[in-house]
Image (cartoon, rainbow, N blue to C red):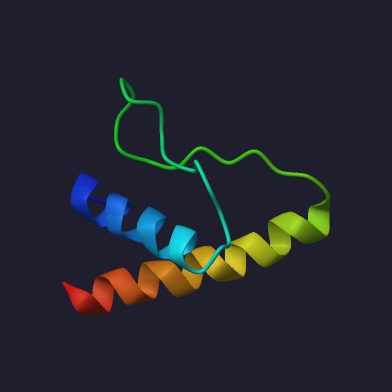
Length: 60
């Protein structure tokens, strides 16, 4: 996924108050950096990631 789309996905997640500071390190390739807790937290996050991905793909 291109950097612009990754940035849009990250912004959507922040606006929905789902994930903060999830972007890759500044010197790393475009991507997400996920620190997670319990397994259920990760399961729920993947649903949000899917939603945000679909939103970004539909918009561009």
